[in-house]
Length: 237
Image (cartoon, rainbow, N blue to C red):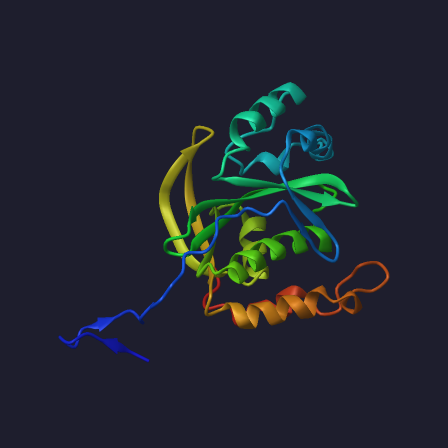
């Protein structure tokens, strides 16, 4: 439906009585397969050990920081970067042990927009239902709390991140060329997002995928998440 102003110019649909949602404040989110906890210094040593399981350091390639030469450097980075309100970091616990990091950032309640980023899954979480559910829980919390838009941005050359965004049902919105510089190199930034209009169908897809009956005894998907979410995308890329 097109909306027009009194001058018969097209304008956006009305957003009336919008209540800005809360900033991320929860201490714990518990899913079927994983738990998220607000990051504390106590999580850091175990996280460092989990990240060391990526022996080549390839998981750090598209991060703005890392790899770290030693645990001391990692702890110093985390203390300086991970305990403010934005970005708001969470430890991802697999079998009650810290195995990954993720955060909310660019948190803007007044317009209902929030980004998920700083995602670093150790090999304990990569290509597992635990790692996927962690991100689903973060998206779910944002929309159920009242955010209108959840964003995901990554280096346009980071094919695994781009695939993950779309597998989670976030639609491609384009590339910002030469958007920033990190590690002394250019970054073109690919943008993905879902909106509150997308959420009802996306929520149903998540609920179907997360059912224990959707996995066999070796935790393999019966209904693949991408089969449920790709049809919901506004655009792929």
